[in-house]
Amino acid sequence: MTITVNVSEVTAKFSELLSQVLLGEEVVIAQKGIPVARLVVTDTASPRIPGLDKGKVIIAPDFNEPLPEDILNNFDSSL
Image (cartoon, rainbow, N blue to C red; front, side):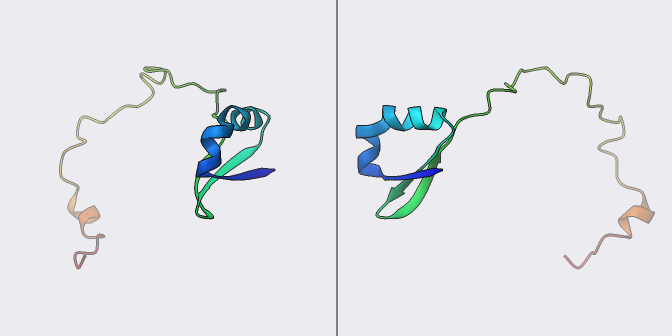
């Protein structure tokens, strides 16, 4: 279920709204009746850990070398 509240209500009800989000609700924040933001629970199942994928991506030594002519010819030069 989605709950819609106006900006003026958010500060007064913030703790209550957070409780609703933690229960799986989505809160839409509106300004003058126009939705401007969503308050949703974050995905805590997969936190970002620096270096977790280290060694899984390999950049070829010739990465910055010009492409071969046969590949370059397939590009549209009119762009």
